[in-house]
Figure: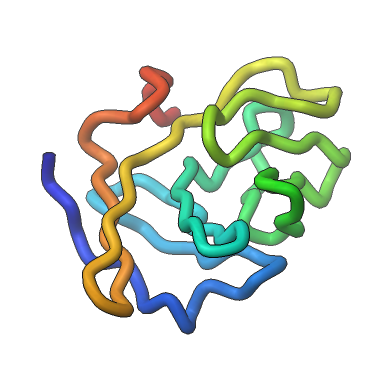
Length: 111
């Protein structure tokens, strides 16, 4: 695994996502309580940046059509999206967030 520094914890808002690019992959880093998640920053339905939507109840929402994706699995939980998005490993090192985009946790390759 090749974890790369993405941001600090302070840069990840409680109800929004932090957008970043790691090795050419656009990701959204989101916080749910004390947990931090990283997913591909692209809705599988409309190819819209998920980091521009809201985060709540361990899900990230696409602002365009309202699809939501589980931050743990990448699976869509609200239509119209039907395909999962990539999820990535996250490590916290002190107050810094590191993400590994080389091997998606859920097996979904970033598009």
